[in-house]
Image (tube, rainbow over all chains, first blue to last red):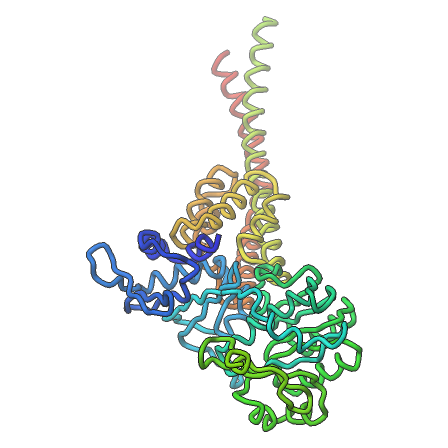
Amino acid sequence: MQKERILRVLPKGVRALLEKEALRYAKLQEIRLRTDKPLLLIYGGEERIIRNQRDGPYIVTREDIREMLEYVSNYSLYAYEQEMRQGFITIEGGHRVGMAGQAIVEDGRVRNLRYISSVNLRMSHEVTGCADQIFPYIIDGQRVCNTLVVSPPRCGKTTLLRDMIRQISDGNRWTRGMTVGVVDERSEIGGCYMGAAQNQLGIRTDILDCCPKAEGMMMLIRSMGPEVIAVDEIGTTEDVHAVEYAMHCGCRMLATVHADSMEELRRKPLLDQMVAKKQFERYILLGCQDHAGQVEGVFDSRGSLLYSEAERMTG
Amino acid sequence: MTVKIIGLCMVIGAASAGGALAAEKVRHGYEQLRYLQRIICQLKSEIQYTRACLGEAFYKIGTSAGSPYKEWLLAMSRQMEERRGGTFAGIWEEQTLEYLKDSGLSGRTVERLADFGSQLGAADVKLQTRALELYQEEIGLAMEEMRREMQSKIRLCHCLGIMSGIFVSILLL
């Protein structure tokens, strides 16, 4: 299934080459196409150059990029105008197609991209069960604590959030199943394709795809009555106000934010006040020193360490 | 004598029917152009208001459209889904020529429609809807021109039919 979804968006020539490669698609992380450059794969953590029939590296053509863009956008780039502005399109399976080219700027903001010369297909990998270890610390009785996942980029915060949503929605040994509302502004959590989540988010999850976080949270509260609301990468004033509003409405919050450490989080404008007001009851700090998604610590609202993966390993 | 008269009536009748058929063809061409304009209008609405992808829009419009537009739209939607290579403009042109060549639309209209595929799939909704609006205007102008000529053409077809019938009858006499 995953193989077909990936191959479907690739140019015919590249598709034929990859079919000959005997790849294990679960190990495939990225496919990079750059005009007039060799076709590259990131496979099992290593870079791999794909060779053509004459045993030379396969050189990606402008036509390949054009064909791929037609497939990725279902021949309708206008339908992905919003996503193009962010530089990527999410395809069926939750995989992400990043693009680079010439930006069209209007009023100082990127309006669209043209002359696209690089395309990067990044595979979406769900890690079901990755939140198991933190569940005892984010559930208080039968109540989910307002939790903020703090992590540097590419350390697995969205993957952890996704698994937390799934387990809360389905219910597990720590909590009963709850209604979860997800505002997925960049289609990262659910990897929605035509409105339907491609990743497992549980049976009681309602997802608002491609919707601005602040507006989406209000919409969910009014329309779907969620017990828990989950959002990725909060940061703007509107986001922070909407998070506070949701908390005052009795919803439990799960959110993520970019930061290297708790100290850095306390120095972040807007979020510093939330930390000072103890609005989040739990902070999960992630790192990727040993592996992506490594839980460096679970802290309570006062900043006391409740759990650390490193301590558990040594202890 | 009676047989002769019956024969002459039949000749005149057949020629008149031929004329009526030609007149109907002119009317049919106009109706087809109007139908095409309706389809373009539906496509524009789908793109503008629901941001539907082309394949999705073709399928939606195609399921409720009449022949041969139904077959044309559904074939395009199917071929886009299959992703066998080639550009969208290529798929559009191929399917347009295959399904609409004998639809009653004039050769010039079918050719222009086949070329229009290169303007679909643009990166911007505004640009896309504007292209469709321009094409709608173009069809509107063609319809206006056709409407002006249609009445005289229809009358001419009827007259020619009857006159040729009478002419053949005189020759037979």
